[in-house]
Image (tube, rainbow, N blue to C red; front, side, top):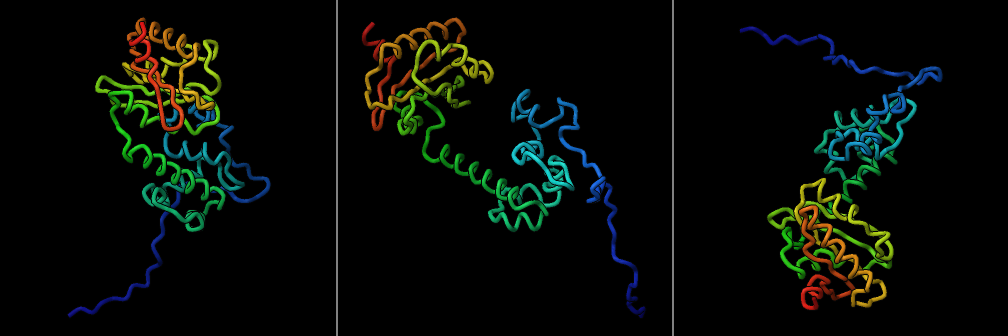
Length: 255
């Protein structure tokens, strides 16, 4: 019978091929500003949109800057690599994240807070709100939260051929006039996302439910513009606390 041999070999060692910068005052750490402009996360966000950025790039934009040891993009990549995407997504304790990932506490708080925002917005979107909008009542149920705003807000819901919402956008904030609400601002999101129909809604902070003359004129202009573009304006609602009215229904009943 052979006897077990106690190993006296050295501990395993993993070679780290990442560049390590010392804390020497004379040591220069590469920054995002040293990258070509078309490779900087913020510029890429403005040019191509958030959907085309990697998770490290999105985190780098959230953090803004790194520290003396690491550039912000390198810090984001290292944190994701060492901590893991799923672990970060479920982390609720910023102190734990800060200590384990070796990142400043403020940056850990930013990550935890942003993920919590995402969870809450997702929960609001999926808790009883219709995914498909087929009538004015459903549109009101989806958009009624704008009645809480103390400023007039124009919202647009963009639908595909199955009446499914593909985009929800705040188009303008302030009193609706033809100078503020241009067909370009209303229909551009539909063109970008392949939507074939738009539902508009705006609130009256005064509580007055009846559409104003500018409300009606803008609606008529948008109906005409939509016909030219092949994008139908399905409805335009005026919303006040607890009630709504459809301008398109009013126009249909009073030609």
